[in-house]
Image (cartoon, rainbow, N blue to C red; front, side):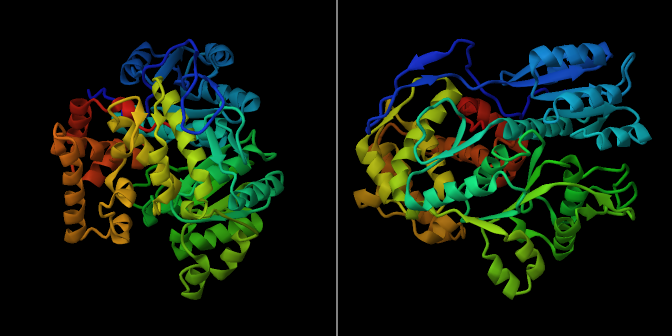
Length: 517
């Protein structure tokens, strides 16, 4: 049995908070440094063999697992353990899974519950989803599928529990997520968030990739009247078009080949809560029509169904595409555009708010320190100036990844200009920076040759650097960061098998450097 977990991990943690003062080139206040919490998983099942198997599968430094043998015991454990996610059997002695789920939903609507059943074709499993279960799984388990579902559920749980702060200058550091900035454009963003958060107004968030659109959506949610209800994010561009409609609205048994069970979609799961539709400009016309209907009347039908279903869901959408141009080209419905564009929040690219870069650099250094429970690194003022001069085609996401890369490669406790990626350090050293086409990823042979020359320039500055292993290690780290530690997607991005990726992770010892959110 493959027991290696691909779940996000938080490594090297301790139960005792550590007090540290971080050194920065710009004066900053000291702050209380506390390690990030592990993900808490509660398993409720009356079969000892199942509890043993699940414990072995999720024996991970990033997962704290508790077990209960009945629904009654599970409710007591929930009150004390405060899990992020509950994995529970449907058929148990005493109080069954459905009764337990009802009580859980009544006391904590935001606690996600995944049901397990060996009777997936019965009405019981369907009823469980209608009661608000996040998902259900069939016994015996497909272990990779189980890990994927658990990982997605834990991420959704973190999204709901981690409050996104927004302020021109954050005065304390006892938070995990924040929208950072005191520039004029960001002040306008903060004002709009505050104005619409307490309403049910549909919002459209626009901006280039990597500007932080999901953070804004989550800030709206956390400061809204629906903050105690579910929040689910769906990346419309990441789901194949033939599956997106089913993902959003669910499907009936037999609706298409492979639809062996009825499935509840995200809109039903998110009833009374908030749904975030990222990259909505990539939707097919058929799915656009259904989204329009939900916005107009709050009703929809599952794929293959005939009965309309009513939901109360706040919709927040985001796109990095110019929807007006898509409407003009008849690629996006005009009526849907106007339904979404009630309030628009436009996030400026990082190159248009360079004054915020020092704040962001300090924030990400602090964030990495918390995640890794290590002594934080300082950064040279010359390195910060290079950050301020770079054009940042990938925006804030690229900045965070650059800092993570430099944090890994820095040979001392201070990040120096030579530790920065060549496209950034070359902005002021005279080394040719990569053309815009490279940043856009057109993948030409000239691009590869340019990157190779830059890598050898780094090697000349450090004769001890073994360039091929160093680059291979960085590629693996970057792929895991870009895919939110999803090993299947990362392997596909790198053009290797998942087994090969695992060997590289073990070979280079990079598990601690993964971007855990």
